Length: 85
Image (tube, rainbow, N blue to C red; front, side, top):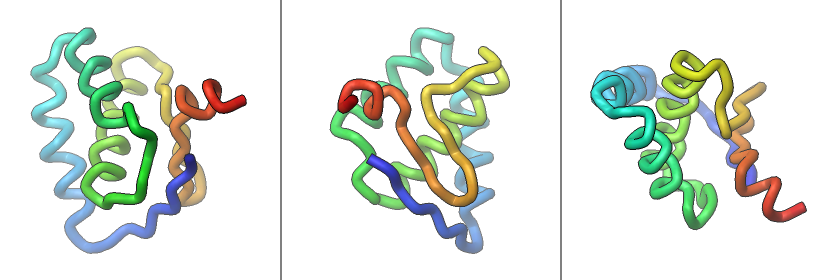
């Protein structure tokens, strides 16, 4: 499922605070957390979407790849998308 993201004041602070916590996670903990956050897909809850964006940024920095695509305000969970196809 795709989620349209419209950024509001305070979003970047939320993402940066979440990333600060994610940096303390092991690689396995980070990926397990991603799977727990997205196990039912992206369903439009703002905190979930911002958390997924933080995980996206952290995965991209750590691994060079991410299971999430974020482009032009559209957030896509590629792992879920692959299951649907």
